[in-house]
Image: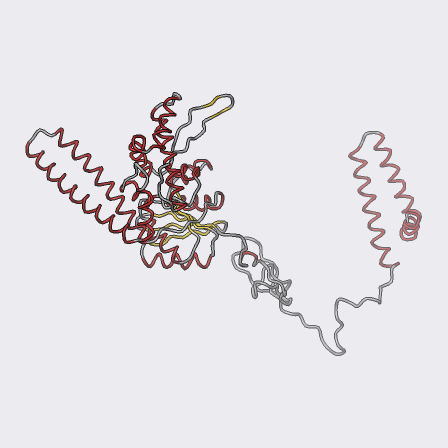
Length: 445
């Protein structure tokens, strides 16, 4: 190839020009040896331009045109005159706000169909429509519940919207979520405001989990999210649903919710009676004492009325009546404890003894690190259930033979009395759980 190129160069430029180029190469090499690299590079560039000029003039004369391929430009019919076609114009500079139509090349952007280019047929394939296709990824929804509004966040689409907390807003929310078909919907328990929302979503047959707000806040801190607004809370709840995925649970029926409200109100009245009794003992003015006594009589009358209402509600349900009879058959368990367990611990009889103890909050929690063995303590759980169970255990350690023997054994082994009482609470709860699960009353050995 090099020999043919040199021969072609000699034929085009002649021997004198070829010898001149050879001399230029020799001179450039000599300049390199002398360290004059700038002049050598310039001479090499000049030689290269001369060679390109040689090949550019010689190759078209040596290569005949090929006739085996069709020409890319169609020939005009005989007698037809060439006509300049109108095009969209040359591309406009970036600082021009509006394109100006002129003859020339097509514009850089299409004015017609956005899915095709000017002068060409539309592509049969959709372009730029990936996000419009229905997503097969599972959706997780977080709802932040407030008094007047619901903030909703959807992951992974990051869709966010808000609706009013009323009938119209709940209907719109249910319709939107039915269209999304989420895998899980999570909302916080916010003092009763979540009940209507949970009922509306449960009526729409949507998977729902109502979680403790403390779990959401601890999760937010663990992820470094310290800011708190309604919209941010909804996003954190959705992220909690996506990462933690709590188990969806059916909400309580209307009768169960009514019984739970009655039990809560009874507990509130008992607390108010205790507070008013303490104030009466400290009051010195006769008028103040009379007002306190009047208030105590009113509260006690309401408490008696609530007790009758709770008793009627429990007796009206065959399942609750059977559970009440089973629970009260255990020595130490009275009507208040039994109805509190029915209203606020519906899982009783459906879990094993370890899980039910952890749910109530009487399971010991390890606090170990390395060689250190910390003190086991109880924490969390349902405070109202734990309180009534504590009072029932105080009675059971005196009148229930099984609990009494367990308590005595623990105290004799050197356990503190409070620790022994908590252990007896756990034993009593396990007995009640087994009785409800097997539907067999207490039997003294």
